[in-house]
Image (cartoon, rainbow, N blue to C red; front, side, top):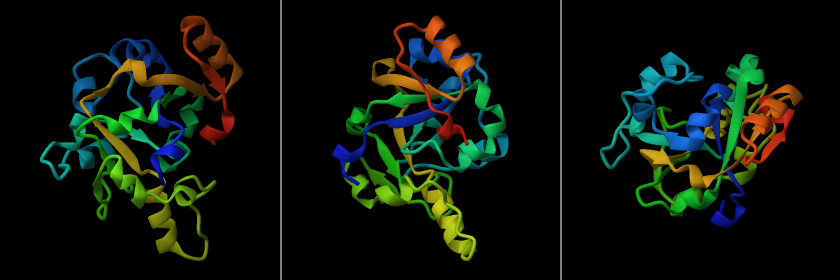
Amino acid sequence: MTLDEVRELHYIAHRENLGSILQRGILSYAAAAKIAHTSVAMPEIQQRRSKVNVPNGRPLHHYANLYFNCRNKMMSKIRSQRRDLCVLRVDPAVLLIPGTVISDQNASSDYVRFLSSPDGLRHIDRDYIFARSWKHPLDQIEEWRHGSAMCAEVLVPDRVESKHIMGCYVSCQSLFDECAEQHPDLDVRQNGGLFF
């Protein structure tokens, strides 16, 4: 993948956090823990992520994490909450922020590679990441590999400033109406297909 091919990055958030995110930006897990918010993170995954250090020595929880494609295994696992979820659309210019790192799959995977940004994009297979599904019924190992790769991340130190938020996707009309009314300056779009 090249920088020109990245049209937007994604951050999955609970709708109740939208106002705070638009004010404070997208915070790292460590920073968000210091303020009241509604988390969509799975505790067992966060426990695993708490043990990961990115090669420069910073803990993974000190990065704001974005996806190339939010329609991944994480979204699949929380799809029952889809009426409460927003996917923030983030300007790919964040790939140029000093210290930003790309993971070629879920950042807590056993075989993850951490790559400098934006050069590491060349190791991201666009067709693989944006496949409609990671399922490979005849090849379990390939299914595991593909599922992890679709969760490739962009890790921005500490936070993504709100100026980089381009808008958000929601799954249904009622949430569209709510977000459009409460955040009239935000480009809200309905895209149920992202939420399974």
